Image (cartoon, rainbow, N blue to C red; front, side):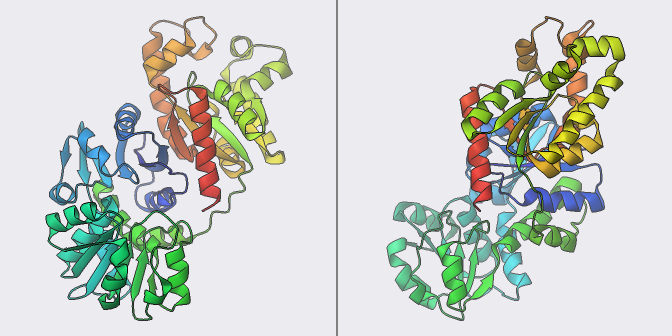
Length: 435
């Protein structure tokens, strides 16, 4: 079974990391796959990684700082920055790294900008902002960190030995600066356009939507470094940490800038039995004003037999053939929430159809939770026989890689009610579509 990697955040569906890492894995490490985790907390990220056998993580907002307390070790740069954006599973231990600090400098250098001796202004004192400050200072730049609250900026300045200011003092700091790095998540105007000179280098880390800064900098003729370059250059050392191989830079860059051409007009819920696909599917369809289709129920209605009876009478292969026909119907419909059977990902044709016609969401839960939900009523034909837990774990583990390669994102259904899960799915899709 191949290795699984993921980016974890909130929100996360908009992240381009799966595109660039999966393209790189196809070229260098074909058995590996990369997905997204729509996390509710840093502890949940590590719990999922442990249970699902995830070998490495990229961590994005808002968990870069919080995740440190759940790790078994943190390398020195990340300790100093107090933020982790890359986690590697080394044996049974999770070790945190920070590749943002070198990524921002390498992005500038790739655009012909040497930070040494330059004056740089960094907007934001969060994890990404601190990484930018550390990276620029390490490259010989003179740095001013500017934050909405002076206390937070001053704390960063005290740690790294740079200058601190508030947003109200941007007008004094920027006229002398050569480089402006924005690590602010808000798209609102923070910098007066009159301060943006033609010789000012501007990198806005918020690459996924047009911010006021990126629009103003473009119209004022500033020298723009695309924020996606920072994403790319932090991903290169992360890839090497994951694989111990050099990253295929141009392949990853091509994937990063390629437009996603999926026509995702439906939502598909995938995952193992007992993860809540039917229940969530019904609630999601109601909430989003879509139609709910439960594939197993559709097969039962068409045949007049239960899934257990189909398995007993005609065998699993006959059932998979029926399932394949159900999935093929997705190509001709829209505005549907499909609750898929647990084994739908066993067929590559199914995977291709699901991915091209819907947003595939992997609902995940621990094996113990799954068995509690499923019970022992014998309605699950694949769990018939002795030692149901071992049987469930074997089947589940064999499918983990298949779920990961199919899903656009994973959401845990542990300790969450259906309404929470439904809202998170809708919020993720809404944010992704509007970026």
